[in-house]
Length: 381
Image 1 (cartoon, one colour):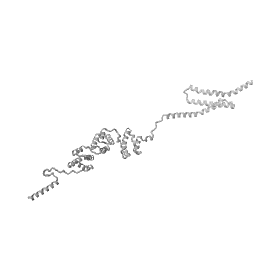
Image 2 (cartoon, rainbow, N blue to C red):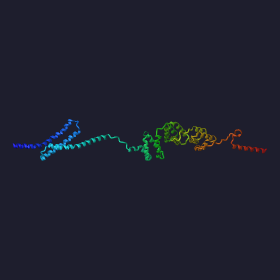
Image 3 (tube, one colour):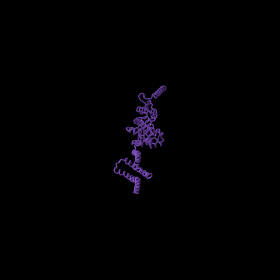
């Protein structure tokens, strides 16, 4: 019997010692299976509850292991389950704040990542606004233009993007002949800002005809094209008057440039008509030099052209060489002086009544000779 008791006592001692093993074997498996089962039962469970369950399971497993190790080493008679429960809850509860912090961080990270996925469009930087157009920069480098004028040209060209190609082509054309490309560019930028600049455009057929007839240079043809575009309403009159003047000048290209410039710059509203002057050229059969001088007289005295041409006729009427006379009186008329009327032309035909039409000096000398003849005749008698 005692042996049996001893045996029972041994079993009783081993029973409590076996509980931790049982719990270590059963609980982890059981608890490990519970979350899975719970997840299976409630697929829509709050993720926070799932994480709390998993952390509680880990804490319980750790405490069970500690209790088992302590019972084997120290032979503690305390209930391992209570020790496990008592010691396991605080760590579990203590683990909640980190869990919450982690969740908060996760949510923040998630929100942050979603915000970064669709960032707002970046505002244009000041550097991009100030960037010089490569073609504008190339023009500046070609003519060695100062940077401040290149920047101003760049700003102006931003407002004329629809005519950029024609504008740059025109600038190359005019700056190539300029003694001071920077100085001329400042003028052209001003014309752009005032809306007066005309880029390189397709030639007009009437302008091309004039260019062929008078062998005009390319830049003169371009200037006439600009005139046609900017004075479209007066195109026919302008080209007709220019053609009139080019007929009687020795350097047509220079004259065309001069006349077009006067019209474009507003010095004159229109060029003077040469129809009356051409009639004088034909009537008095003026030579080339005289015709050129008469054209210049009409150009310079356009305001009082009629009175000046009337004075020219009077002088040509009293001259035996009309071309020479015209060249003689041209300079004072061009300079704006007023010519006196020419003296009356002597009547070489011999006579009106009593010889009144004769030059007074000639008449006096003739009378003296007659008196002498009469005196001589009386003495002989």
